[in-house]
Image (cartoon, rainbow over all chains, first blue to last red; front, side):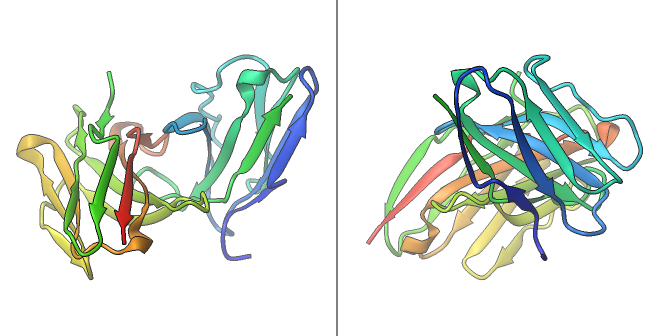
Length: 114
Length: 116
């Protein structure tokens, strides 16, 4: 597709379960970002990938959160032992690389932990 | 400290009124980039504009215009003759060349409601 694709659109999980969220960036975009948006809140930075460089994980809230990007394309955000406070919309974005270029966002995955 | 401040949490205007959304940023970099995004009720963030720190020219795109003033560290967004379809949350964002690409710093957003 032409845009950033995220799956699933919605995910309901039980507290304590692990979840995986997927992001397909725009073809050719070397930079990929994950953000989290809680209800009515702004965007919280989680992690950033740029090409083959080591990712910037400075925004991950705990060691229950991890992310991978395989082959410089698809990324998976994994949350282990989910907690209710993890409930949020997880947004993925990609850009041509570097903060000088705009990022394009997917529609997000709405995660609900019950 | 917040790098991007959007002091207006919610704004309501009547259709056809003009409205300005404020954005104040903070950075020590001489090279940086500013952005505005729109998040309609559907939820997907839509890119509106990018500005680099060396270009202080105001920009107009249809009913939208942006006023970038380095002297006051502001990048304000004006919608002229607002329409109901403009109802959305608008986010201002900053990225810094020194840490190019590491992240975009977003403000907390301004929720705009245009009343018909």
